[in-house]
View 1 (cartoon, one colour):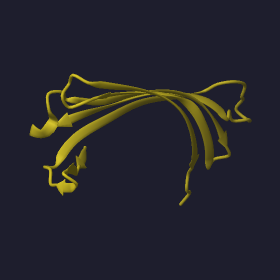
View 2 (tube, rainbow, N blue to C red):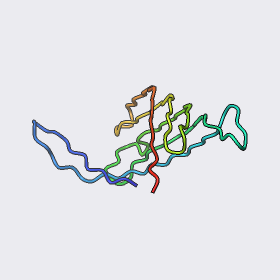
View 3 (cartoon, rainbow, N blue to C red):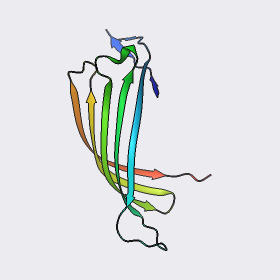
View 4 (spheres, rainbow, N blue to C red):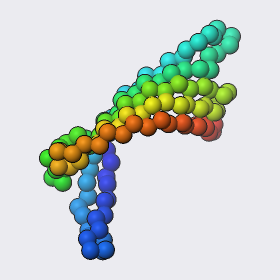
Length: 117
């Protein structure tokens, strides 16, 4: 659950707004692809995920669905600590009025590092 403090500008001044809440949930599937064996661990993978955001509380407006993100990507592990991933993200954002939608298509490149303790 997220607690969000979103300020509004009215006549060039910040107007205080009530706190907004939303939940988000992501389901992700990641699988190896290509050649590999038990001695040579596979480094290439593909990833599919779907994440949705839902507004909660009295300030949620007419629509409870805030956004949905669908992602498909390919990646490569560089050892145990580094990975690079490139893919396509489709993000559907539903405005609070529930009558307006924003449909974003994005190509993403991600570099990740895992810190070992």
